[in-house]
Length: 239
Image (cartoon, rainbow, N blue to C red; front, side, top):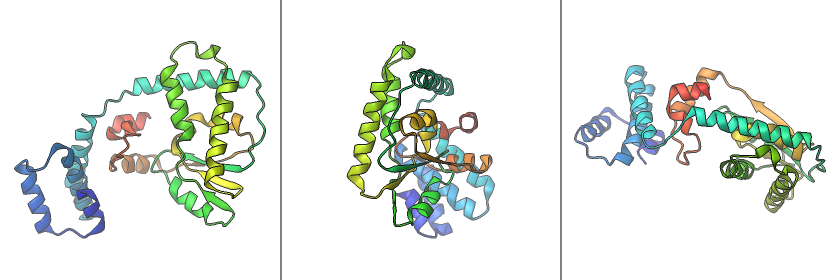
């Protein structure tokens, strides 16, 4: 709520002084403080007091990081698992029929501009903007967490046929249009797999200035905690 207030109204110095006083007196609950810090950071950024702004962005991210465990090393292990799965799946030479709908996957880092590109594309009356369809990432992430060994021995033809069927059922339940966009940024992790199960799909890769993208991640709170790397600058850069 506090962060939203900072976006919806112009805050005056009296309001900010009162907030700082409440912070000093520990009148906010711990879960509220991160939002207060982000609000203050945005306030000082707009005032061009970048030293104060950075201080509160740092406070906010450090507070969140304490409660969200993350390891870039574990993340790299996940990347290796994806490579094993793709290599095995691609070597099986399984053929999938083209999807009945044309799917445009808009991929890239979060905060890179995927939403803006989808808005442009879906202005066409023949295109349905699907938003962030998390079906692919959710199912493959779940699969990766349940199978740690013998990944190279599994039959991926059936696994990904089921995933493909579920995805097609989902989009057909949402629209009758023949062209859809899916702007889930983290689909980039499974780009090779997606191209194999949807051979006629199209991809738009959004690339933003790395520093701008990193800072945009650092100054935003993701309530679903889908981007746990984003609360530490070194993790963001490594990711």
